[in-house]
Image 1 (cartoon, rainbow, N blue to C red):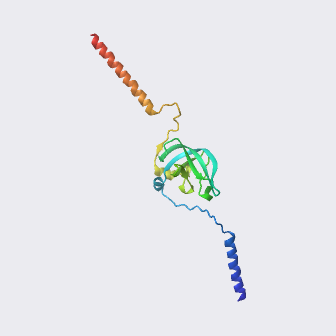
Image 2: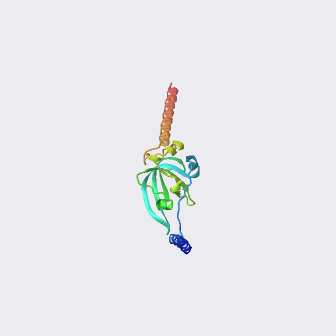
Image 3: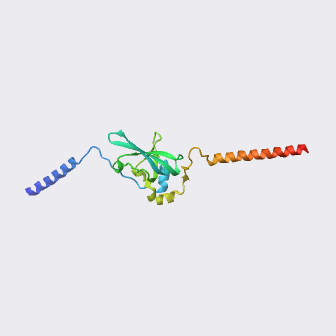
Length: 187
């Protein structure tokens, strides 16, 4: 009987020692809800496909939180992005902090939220995907809006070319009209 009581006390003591040894005042866990593609499109402020062209330095927000900025060359967008380059911020601790770490020169389908400072934020729970693995999401999203990344400075856009063509055509019509009116008045 005494052996049994001592065994129980020993087991309870070991359990308590384990609990107090591994107890921490700070606990971080990342638990993400699964969302369908259409739900993500509605939920997030920006949805785009782009290639990482620059990875910024880590910045500390607090002793327990760091962020990093990623610059993307945008190829196409479904929501919230119109420029050919966009900066996204993510926690920099990887999956341990619910952050998402992008790799340079890789192309991703990115879902990002807009914070109070108009900064685009993303995380592990945003369900960002490498484009090569995003086939089902891309199929459900459709074609999106192509962002003209080939339109370098100095090359006129189609709107400017249309305006120039219209002006030249107008000048030709005026010149023909004046020529005809002059030839009629001479007769």
